[in-house]
Amino acid sequence: MRTVENALGMEIPLNAQYIRNMIMGAHATHDHIVHFYHLAALDWVDIVSALKADPRAVARLGEKLSPWPHNTYQEIKANQDKLKTFVGSGQLGVYASGYWGHPAMKLSPDVNMLAAHHYLQALEYQREINRVVAVLGSKTPHIQNVAVGGVANAINPDSPDVLNTERLFYIKSIIDKVDDFVENVLLVDTAAVGAFYADWTKYGAGVMNYLSVPDMPMDTKGTVFELPGGYIPDGDISKFTAIKSYQDPFFRDNVKESIKHSWYDGDWDKHPFEEDTVPKYTDFQDKGKYSWVKSPTFRGKPAQVGPLANVLCMYAAGHGPTKKYVDKTLATVSALAGAKVGVGALHSTIGRIAARSVRCAVLFDTLKNQWKALMDNIEKGDMRTFNRPTFPKGEQRGFGFHEAPRGALSHWIVIKDGVTKNYQAVVPSTWNAGPRNSQDAMGPYEASLIGNPVAVPEKPLEVLRTVHSFDPCLACAIHLFDKEHDEIVRVKAV
Image 1: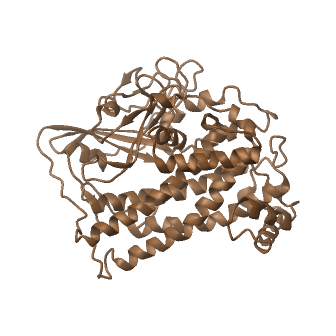
Image 2: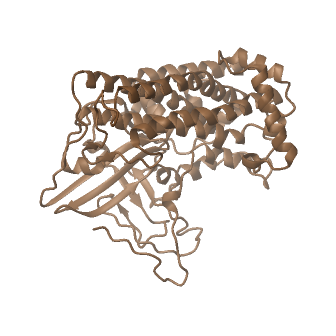
Image 3: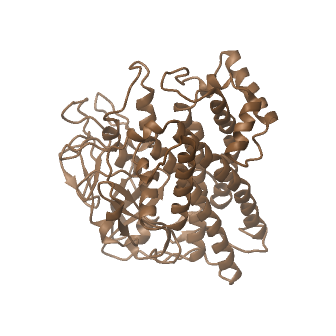
């Protein structure tokens, strides 16, 4: 979408920008809640230990940590009984694969129970915020309303058949409901886990070149953004360089990919406009090709993307809400840990998880701002949501980027006479999961594991903690391969 718009030099109606921004903000809020509670937390929280907790003591702990009204004894006791039913049945369901009782688990039963209590509550709140995506996008997660040139949402405040006042205020009611959970549960729980596992600020930094892109455009041309982005080399936020627009050559000219260690035909470093994707599987080779993932680089070096990169870049850019939530989270961690914890602690496994929750809070503020901006623009009488694209003769090149939940996502297109000539995607988990590049420099996953402790080699919980902190999503690296070399399927774009 943005890729083609960039190639065609299009402007996008303000309403379409705000609607897109709200979809992205709600989706990312949902994603970050799910990651902390339902994907990563159980690397740190021992569910079986939680069964030994005293619900009254857990309620007192919850009251001490935040004003969240649903930390009552009755609610905590009900959820503990629910967990006991799971364990007593011998069918642990979603809890079945945890390393319960592992020596690296160090939370007390009461803290484990509070986290488990919020795990179950988070199921409701991630579902609620995802309703925003469904209302605006017609479906979630594969939205149906986005088109090159804007969105398909017709706006009429008084019509029951399109995006109207009632639907917009329904969205606002959802935002208000989830707001309290993000600030008084998610952020607090993340800080508590960070404080109890403060030793994990020493592990998992890995690649400290951070790449993030600006997002939530506030004008029709993609030159003004609510959320800044840019590049930080070697973890030094004083050397931050901003990416300023959808046309910024600093981003456009500095992205390349290598396939020296990837199962593709050849051994090259190429810009996305020039590269191809021709599979050539060779079996695993220790010093050769060993991954389906390509190796992206920025300015010739591996770069880490994701919430940590995004938060550090916004912090370096002086973004007010980011500074507020970073400072608040670090103050809570410091108070619980009994020692001053600074921004430098974020360069770590546990810091990566904390940054995701900080980003969630920032996005939630942004979501509220986008809703107001949309309402204000409609109040002015502007109902436009779409500009029709035109495809000229000749060749056009364009790229589009988005700060997705897992980091900087960019697509690259070459159009020739109205037809796609080449299309490449450089996605977040490719940046982080990429194998060694053409200079044999390790990508973020590999580099972050160097020096991690492993207490029980047969149960490498610590490795999972660090890899899970990136929130891996490798669907883009899954390939069907026939060892007889028969063609499985061929897709032709017309």
